[in-house]
Image (cartoon, rainbow, N blue to C red; front, side):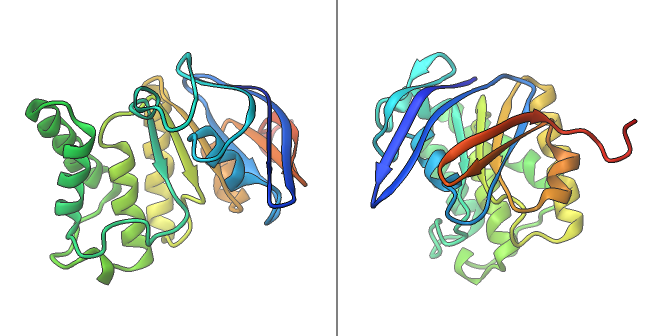
Length: 223
C-alpha cells in the first residue's frame, strides 16, 4: 500500500531521512516521536504536499506532487480541526467532499451513504449547526468521515485521538480495526501510546528526522 525508498526532505534547516518504509494492507501502523521529530513532515511528504528526493509509491503508483490518481486511494485526517469549511454544516461539508471526489452522481450517492454508515459506527449524530460551532472532538469526527467516505485504500492520520473522549477513542480503534480487516492500511502519527498500543499492529519511531524503529508492538502482558 505504501513504499518509501531512500526518501529525503530538506526544508527550513530541517532534514528528514533518508527513510525506507513498507506498509501493507491489513496493517495499522503508529508513527511516534517528540514534537519536531518530523512526523507531520513525513505525512505531508507522502501526501505529495512537499518536495522530496527518493521514491514514494501509494498502491503501486509513484507520488509526484498531489496526483489525483494517487489521492483517490488516500484518505487524510489532519491534526488541525480548523481545516474544514466552518460556514457549512457537517452534511453540507460531506456533500461538498462527495462532489469534489466523485466522477458521477452514483459515486456521490455511494460516498454519502458511506458517510452515514460512518456516523453510526462512530456514534456521531451531527448537531444542526455550523461546523465552526462544533467542539474540537466533533470537528475531528466530521473530518474523519470526510477522509473515509470514499473508501480509500490507505488512511493517513495526524493525531487522530486529539480532542476525542474515551468512548470515541474506543470506537475509532474498532473502526480502524475493521478498515484494516477489509484490506486497508493505516499510518497514523500519535503521542497517545496507550491507545496506539491497543489499536496498532506496528510502531515506527522518528528521532531528529531519522526513522529509527519499525517493530511489532508486544503487549505488556505477553510472555
